[in-house]
Image (cartoon, rainbow, N blue to C red; front, side):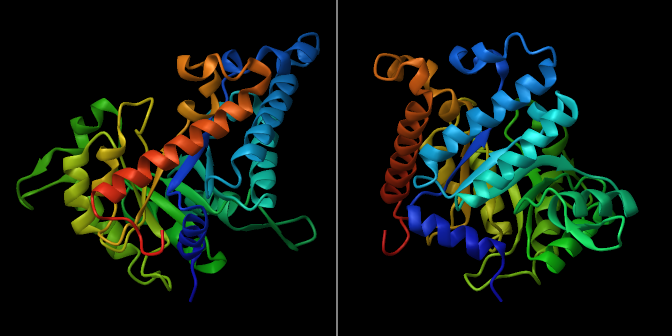
Length: 322
């Protein structure tokens, strides 16, 4: 049966672009012309949320034929209360209406009924006052923290099965201090913590393998640790990797190659600031003025696609037909 990762891989083939754009708006980096007419709004939470939505929509309009997916990080929206959450939800809907897969980056985790609540909120359905089921935020994938164990992940997997959605579990993250815990060796097992988590993720997703051979239960594996990525690719051959760390965080195209299988599939690489705020970079400043920030974003996305494409080609990992 086709799963969510089959849909994602189909979009990757259509665009020949295994990349995802992170929609992480920061008000201080938003072009001034979008903020000008909102400066005197007495409700600044609402004003910023509306600016974020307009900013995201303009970005989506320009990248929807370049990349297969977007990844809004909910923290940037939650700062503005329910207005921000509405902007997040409206962004999700707008991206999906424009044919994009949406990865909700919320890193949710809890146990029991609370985990079920998070899973239903983002991936499933909830009951209305009339006892009818209605969709929650309805992203396609959700990032999940697995470090509470199986009872913190199983509710999300159950909802994935029921509604044909997907999750990405944090395994080896891109941040500099990730090794403080994730790289610790468990003497009894003679494995690192991240290797144990990887084995758990692979096992958990083994009965959710799609037509193209990949599970809808994926893993977050940072581009900043290519050597660890090689190990993880072997431990999780049928797992889709969400790869942060490319671009602004220091990871290059060659660093992400180990995250891909030999067939050229198995990973989708994220860039956030490097795309959505490209207009601020020296290489784009002279070509794209502030009011054309979304065209700069498109150009940056096209260049990222070419960068990853060439890296896969040089490594002999370019998918057939590309």
